[in-house]
Image 1 (cartoon, rainbow, N blue to C red):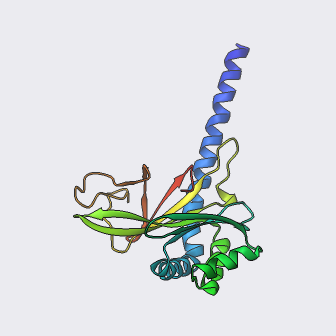
Image 2 (image 1 turned 90 degrees about the horizontal axis):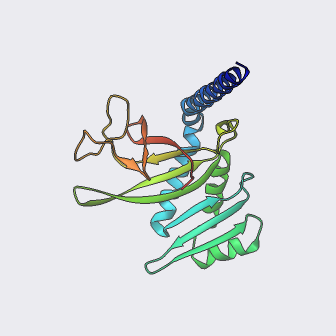
Amino acid sequence: MRRGCTILLSLGMMSIILLCSCTHSRKFTETYYSENEATLRSIRSNYERMFDEHPFSLELKDPFLDRIGLEIITDSIKYIYAFRLNEPFLMDTLRRYHFNTKAFGDLIIDMQRAHCTWITNLDYYEHYERKELMFISVRHQSLKAFLKPEKYFTLAFFGDEQPVDEKKRLLDRDGKQQLRKINDKVYRSINPLVFYALTENYR
């Protein structure tokens, strides 16, 4: 009898934890984008402009958002660097690759403000035409849940409107009955150009 009560109590506790974590994540999803939309627009326009000049990906590596990882992509090789924001080597590297240092600084400030931990461009194809989407990951205190691994709020920004099903899940444009996954995750619509998922990994 005592063992049965213990099992029921454990199951009850697990149900409460799962319910709270789901509610927590849902509430975050509903509020994060609207509260940070202006900053995310700034991040997107700034990154697109800089990426067109010098393809790169940027990571804010730690919870304090003051260590960065920089991947600079050339025609033949990808260079990977790690810096603290106050290191002179960061500015030296940006100048070496002819980055706009002010725009780069503004991008980091916006990413810190919106708790973004990773930004990159991903290639995809529609009707044999190569396209790009911008991929942003967010690490946020509100996504932490008791006894659950850390979650990331990931955003996919498309250049044109995307098809969705009745649950606002992203669909494959060619065969619109099939879900289109990004990194094996189902994404849901915030608006016709922006989609989101909760993931275990930031990239």
